[in-house]
Length: 299
Length: 316
Image (cartoon, rainbow over all chains, first blue to last red; front, side, top):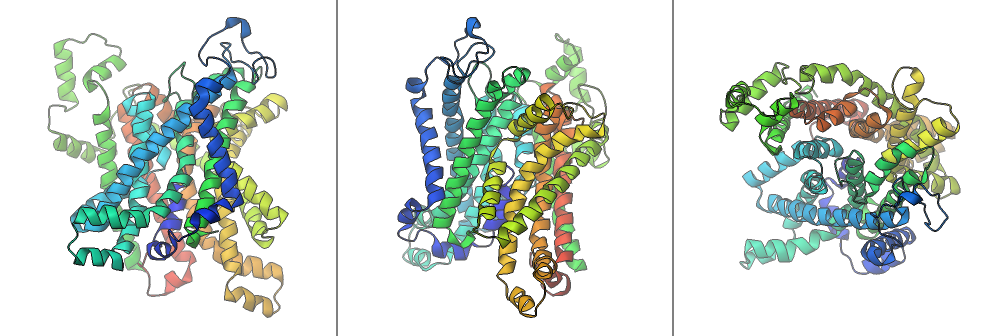
């Protein structure tokens, strides 16, 4: 959430050098031998599996209220206990994975489409279009990400759709800026000049020649930002602006558990643990991908 | 040098105008009729046609958009951000009244974060790839990955519920600042530790460090007076960025700990559909971050003699 400006510090003005490394052969092989990347991939993979298979895996219905089983402790027939309405916490966390990862995946798709698209256009055409897009990017990046997303969601009114609009309208700016730098560097390369010299149409140059060559750094960026995105979505839900009850969402579950912090800490501990594990997974994967795909910024 | 600073300040103008346009346009996103929602916020559920018309004129809603923006901006520049529809207070004053508490919290948090991160990052760099380094990197990873709202409650469970050492909500005593500041500090420390480590590693690889060592300088002097001094340039920059980001974190942490700053205030305003306050907050926060970034840039120029003395100023 807050690390995006730091990412930018690492990403700015390195287009040329980074392109030199990007997409070299054997990247997949190095990734498979990178231990932290593999741990990250395993975490993200298992969570994705849980998210997809939640309807089959979950031992109980996530929204069925059972007054007789209120606040039962972990370890009984409800493995992680039940909440204040007697709902099975494990099942709610599994269904929550569906919502959190689904939201993050959809948001990332939108962010990539907008950010990469506008970055490509900005870098390739230059001039007035470039200026206009980059001034908007400057304004958005002037804010801490959560502040602006919060204000947008606040005005639109609560709901997972508002949250999606809020985070997408903020997060695309990073990608547009990084993408523009990469395109500026790539534009001077021979394959692009060659394509232009042979009369290839602009759109074709953009999609067939530029896009594939500048993609590896974008993959790294999106994996590193995925964690921040999940944190932002759950934070907004925690504040009551995201998923509404009885929808099982990690941030909202945590918020519901506040009143029972002393009597039944499991209401808060497990959803928080789920968020942390997923975010750690994406951060490990992103670090590993950066080492492999983008060695220039290796730390 | 002076030219660089002037240019840097001049560059703020278009970005600030952009921020003001953004803050103004937020109200356009609001669902429903702003007049009706304002009247409802004042407790008038079934307004008469006259009431609606009167308010419509009062709010200037009959003017075209650009005219409304120009009026809004002219007022904003004079410090008039309108009135809260919830409390009737002037928006700017309600923000400036609460801002010192947020600044206090953020400053304590960033100092605490640096106290944790600087030694940890320096030690991790010195003992690279040894257990201490792995431990500090793991700590930084976890600290950066766990949500602040969860961390806040883990700290509450430990220090307030179990140990009964610290108060949870409010701001009456000095002890009240500890838990919210610690929550923010741990998140900040995580990224500052990573950065300190990599900045130190970069400096330790430099020629001048080898020279200093071969001169027979004590290792402590080499590390602190030479390497750390140079690494500070990068650390100051990121500390500034972090400080700005703490504003975002403060929204959540202030809400949890009932800390009476602008973060909690804006969350309350969102629940009250208080659009003028939300707009004012966005303008206020954006302006503040621009100023923080300006100070950071100037500090960067001042700290780095290559920029301060050389002709490369402005090559930013």
